[in-house]
Amino acid sequence: MTALLASNLLTGEAMPPTGYLIGLLVVILAITFTLRALPFALLRPLRNSQLVAIMALWMPAGILLILALSIFTGTITDDPARWWKPTIAAGVTVASHLLFGRKTLISIACGTISYVLLVNFV
Image (tube, rainbow, N blue to C red; front, top):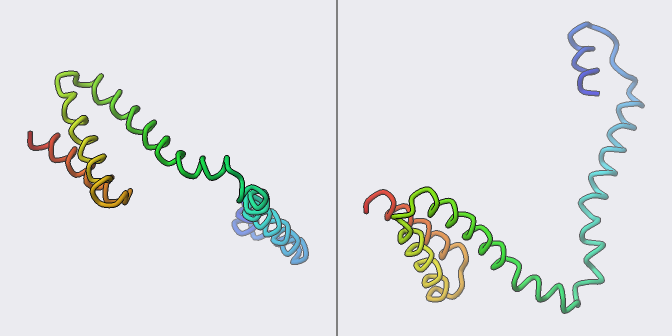
């Protein structure tokens, strides 16, 4: 459709009828609304589910664990002699997470800053 409109503008041909464009917009808006509302409608019955509560608790930690392991693997295989730098940064991340009341943003920032400082200045 975009190519059709662009070619019409370039060649000077007539644009599609207004009713066609309005119908196209209605279809696009309906699909967008449905795709955005569908997850909320599907999760409504699951809000009181024990499984969803457990997943909400453990999923962020699991995702961070997978991310950390992939970064550790890449860093350690690239330079095995410097394995201690990401290990110290991970320790700083865990310590700051526990000391600052489990604030994820603060702990990630502390770990990232410590790793960048270790890599660049030690």
